Length: 259
Image (cartoon, rainbow, N blue to C red):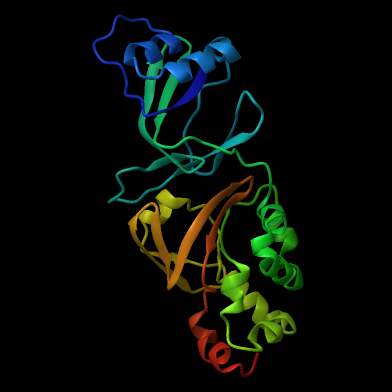
């Protein structure tokens, strides 16, 4: 049994005297004093927690309790193909006596503690979406503990940009509402890294959304801008500033007909 420790901005130690403990690996680098101190205080260097095999959508329990979601992206042009809770693993499997150090490019904080639905319902800026998800009968699906979903979540302001009367019409027409909402759902987990290296993704509704990204911090889905990424226990939420309109619904929504 071995410990796997994720570290921010750390390179593997080359030409070092082996064997090294995890603390040795950190100290050899010399610029991770805060992490070394915290690791020693928490006693994590003596905690043994299992060697990890990287598979897509694998949930890895942490010493503290919450799971870390591993995603593996098989994208030929991707510089980063492995992520942990959305953080890119930029230097994997730095060996130490007690396990491995995985070098990541973001701090994994906060760790997810709610499902997609609970994150939506607890966010005041997503209250319209929460109502729509409930009306469409999607609460159980998007609350599934074993789910692996990406949800593009329009803000209240995004819904307010729809033509007058459209939102009320949608909330009264479950078929149309479900068609719209499932166009915002992908049946796999694509964090910012996954989106950045993608161009088109098939939605649960059946048609594709187009991804355009100049960086992991600047991503557009169709004509919507991604404002924030929220990791959940059953996937990921991308908060967006515009409602995504399925191609088959565009005329009806714009002209408020046949909803």
